Length: 115
Image (tube, rainbow, N blue to C red; front, side, top):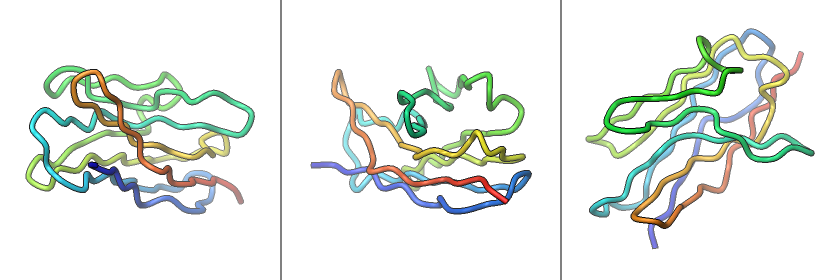
């Protein structure tokens, strides 16, 4: 079964940057890495950034202007560049993919923004 592997999380000071990456374990026809979500303690999982159709994207209002989602089709990866990080960005970040009506989630990577 195809798996998603996230990397790039860690501890960063407020104002700092991190880049997350998500890779699929294999290529499958119709399998699409859609984007990034996050879940903070005591909160529901929420959208951070995703590709909608083609190269169109949408972002959570809280990250607009700070985060950039991108993808490398040759490597079958999707990345999330996070700049000007704030303590409220602290969460476990998950990569999401889909094939047909089935969603796939990565195991998550912790991002902690703290001084």
